[in-house]
Image 1 (cartoon, one colour):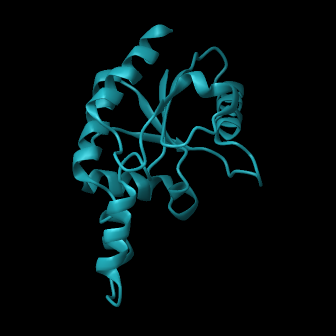
Image 2: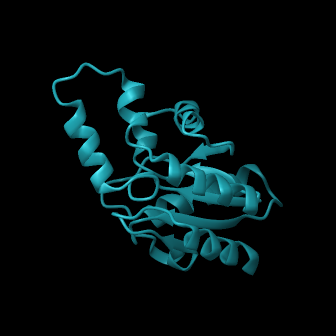
Length: 162
């Protein structure tokens, strides 16, 4: 099974978008959905959607957004921006000081225990580099750029290596 571990901030948005979202919401009463939707760039969500279609992969959210929202809510937010893929799961909570790569590893171990015999082929899409021993599976975005079409090609190359 192909799994894309997905970060949101720095992948589906940029620091500039987050700042402008915060500036425009100052003093306004907004629904929670409006605030979070304003922090997702539809163009970057479209690139993510294209990657998921081309790779035929499932998405596991490793973003800190998973702490604030359920898997279903994250799916809803992405769908509102045009995503047609599937969020399969979210990674477990991070322990103090734990690298994201180790959290992803714990998710993978748990999945393998529950699904013996199912091979995992993973790519991590993130703007951070704290992937520990899984760094070789990282497609790293730039915080002020987010996902680009070039990242699709890098991710597909990694998926096709296995």
